[in-house]
Image (cartoon, rainbow, N blue to C red; front, top):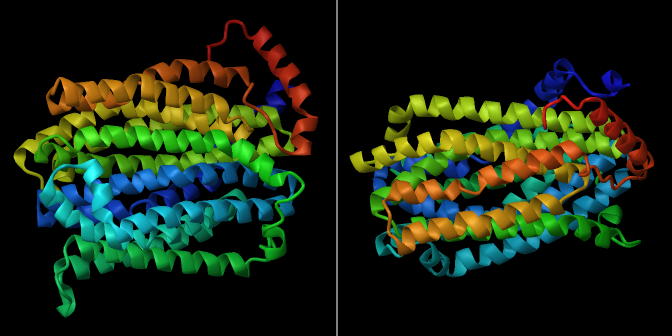
Length: 477
């Protein structure tokens, strides 16, 4: 029975190659706009790099504020797809899009009307704010476009249409790169706009991405046809069920964003070379996280589909396999970045001091990032299975009881050297790892929202208990 229901590594790697890798590549491309901005602005000097880096941190806070709704949508999309419930997919799409747009309009309004207000929270450097404000104002217009593109991409990924979001992201990235090259440096008679030119490239590429996604979504009537009459049918307790499942994820993402903001406030009070090095590091970290984040989204789709269809043991096995594969990939990628740190960091026009900072930050992240990846992928699997509370409470507790106080004390009270301050940013990850490994093994996170999944839940729990009883000599994971 165990061999029939637990997928082997060969079938798992096949799933990864046909589903997870395209999603990972699309996520990587879709989240590289700000990274491209930071890299291409490197020729303008450390000040411009630091300014764009600060704006990227604000965009990260925006991401955390709306991603709870997107994460909840992915849970419902994947489980409804496994159960073949197209009406449920439509209702989830409509409600998620409405909630995410509300967040985007709030952030976009602040960014456009008074960008200096939010920039002053992140840094006290007047010269950085002066460069960052025009960039922030233009990017604010792109926020509503971003959330619509994200929810459409999540819908397509969950219904196994992974090529369309990948192609739209490729076109958008090329558009962003070309416009950046023209507007940052003033090519073809255009004005030399610097950081503001990079923001225009981000805005236009966002428009291109959304138009392509909308076109492809409306053309496909065979997989899941989007119908306005179903999108806003939130009665019969659906909205309550959706918000109940989403609420822990929303709290997780928003509080995590708040914690990261407090950490970024500390970083923003460091020396200019440290801020520039942090901006460069965030780009390299972003490349790693964007690819791995796509694998995490894929794990949500794969695990959620099996749980929604009632194949819980298969979903359980996939979750454990993703939790081994993804940290291994992260370690390899960061190790490669560390080996080539000199030429990579030179792309950002950093000075000698910032270059040293960047190298040692990558060394710290080689260990911290691998552990962080393992925690993240397990939390995504818990959400896909229908359990969002455990991961939320654990992550936020560790963040605000360990990481944030330690980083704040190191930077704002004891004024330790920058690398010492940076090392405290990831202090919570090892604690989380112990508890998440234990909870993964229990299988208690399998809590389906579909009737098909609920029907086979007791059988799964009984079978898992029998398996673990027989396997007393097995590893803890």
